[in-house]
Image 1 (spheres, rainbow over the protein chains, first blue to last red):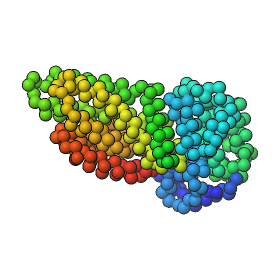
Image 2 (cartoon, rainbow over the protein chains, first blue to last red; image 1 turned 30 degrees about the vertical axis):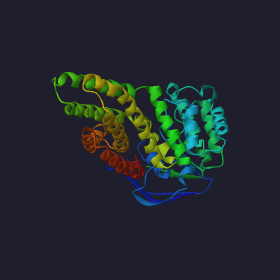
Image 3 (spheres, helix red, strand yellow; image 1 turned 120 degrees about the horizontal axis):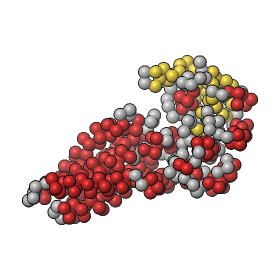
Image 4 (cartoon, each protein chain N blue to C red; image 1 turned 180 degrees about the vertical axis):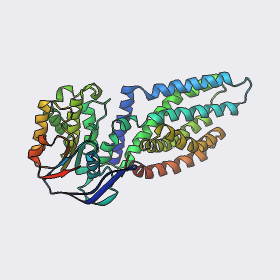
Length: 190
Length: 205
C-alpha cells in the first residue's frame, strides 16, 4: 500500500511538484500522466524511496519489496544479462536464483543472448533486461517510468502481460492510452 | 555471512567491469610510469633518497586520484546507484566492495611502480613497501567515500581532487617519514568513518 499526502519536492531552485496526494491500495494500479517536465519521474523516485519528499507524509512498503524501472534500465552495460541478474539476485538473496533468472530471460526473449554484453544490445533489448531486473525479486510494488519506451510490438505485449498481473503498480507515462485499461487510480500532472 | 557475500558479489562485479572495459588500470600504469620517468629526468643527479621518496609518494597519490575518478563511472553514467540502493544489502557493502576494487588496481599499479622507482632512483626498502601497502588502504577507503560524494555533486571532476588531496597529506607525511603506526592509525580511523558515513553520502545520489 502507498499513502502520501501533501507531497512536495524541489530540485535545486525548481519546484517540481507540491501538494500531491497519492493513495493506492494493495493490488491497485496508479496511472501517472502529464507532459514532459511535469515531475513524473521525480514522483516515482520519491515513491521508490530514492528521494525524500521536502514536505508531506509518505508511507511506503519495505525497500526490498519495490521493483523500479526508471529512464535507464539500471543494468551494467559491460556485463552480460546473466551476470547482471545474478548480481542483483545475490543482493536480493533470491532462493533458486538460477531458475528465476532463466525463466525471466526466456519470458523476455533474452535467453539466447544471455552471455552477450549489454553494451551490444539495442535500447529495446536493454529495456527488456531492465524489466527482468525490476521483476527479479517478485516485487509487491512495481514502479515503471515510461516503460513502453523503445519496446517493439512483441515486447509491448509482454509488458502488457506484466501489467495485468495482480500486483500494486504505478506507471508514469505521457501515453496513457496504452495502460488506461489497467488503471484503478489516476494522478494527472499539469 | 550475507554481508561478506554481498561484498564479494559487488567486488567481483567491479573487477569484471575493469577486466572488460580496460580503462582504469592501463591509465594508472601509464600515468605512474610516465610520472616516474619525468621525475627521473627532472631531478638533479646526486639528489638524496628522501627527496626521491617524496616524488614516489606524489606519483602514487596522483595515480590513485586517476583511479578514483573512474571508480563510480558506471554507477554515475547508468544511474546504477538507484538499483544498488534499492537492494536490501547494507549500503556500506557497496563502499567496501568499491574500496577493495580500488585497492586492487592501486596494488597492480605499484607492482610496476616500485621496481621502476628502484631502477630510476635508489632502491626500495621493506619499510617503504610496508608504508605503501598501509597507505593504499587509507587511500582506497577515503578516496572511495569522496568518489561517491563527488558523483552527487555538480562539479564532480573538481570536487574529488579538492576533497581527496587535503586528506592525502597525512598519508604522504606518514609515507615519506616511514611512520608505519601513524599510517595504521590513519587507516583505522578513516576506514571506520568512511564505512559509517557511506550510507548518508549515497542517500540521494
